[in-house]
Length: 334
Image (cartoon, rainbow, N blue to C red; front, side, top):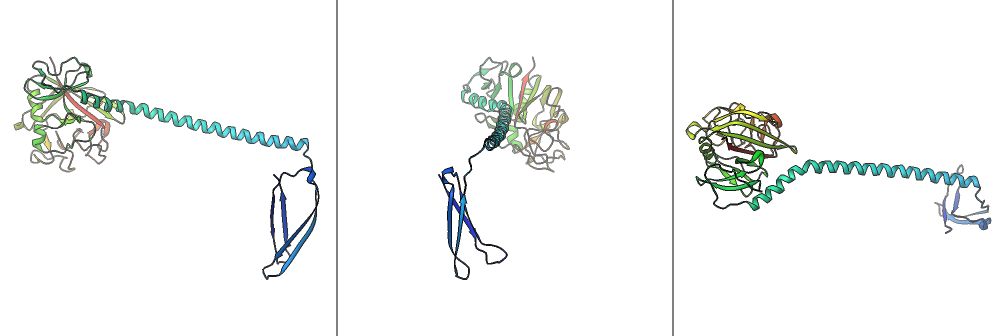
């Protein structure tokens, strides 16, 4: 395809000549010869002018050296393109590896959600009675909802560290508001089907006063899992403000609960005259065994990053981060 491009400039400056330029592409040697070029133009004053020129065009056949130069240029361009392709492949590989790593980090958390959802749908909510050792049952389900001999409905963990746990507090989705008053924390609240609840201080008191109990706290923070095990756990009755008795820490979560030993339970909405504490300086984090501050508060605001407000476990979250999952459970020691 032999195309021509024409461009030019008409100059009224005597020091600068007017010109017209014609460009051919892909000329063949047979197209060599004389060419007459003529142009009819009109200047800015409306005067008509003609430009004529005789041109001799000679199409030279490419030499071997010319071909070598062209080939070298093409090879250089090909090498540069190859390097860019390799760079892009490496970038894609790095992105894929980063994506895979993130997927691996997310998988434990996804398993919790998926297995949790499945467990709730398959839970046995019948009137099963376990008079002697609550939650000590053999089951393929990690969590079951069962009725104790007293009639209290509880959620059991049947697998962690041998099973036999009664879950007294659970946070997993942020769907249940834990900013409750004294009566609600006394009686309990939440939804087993959702998987978020607080068993109630009165129920916890009655359970732990009937024998020797241990407490386990499971946490998930930044896609890593931690636990704290306490060999002695008990809370007193309501007239004693559900005072906490706890000791014997073991685990990898750091001990952020022993600080609350011998402290009374309090909520923001009620029991304010019990003891001056940081709860009322920074309102809104639910109910806990607060003192002049706190080392933990698993009943705080879901995923809050405000100071002192979130689901805190100080050794892992400090006061400005929140755990994504928490589960407190007790088991009688025989």
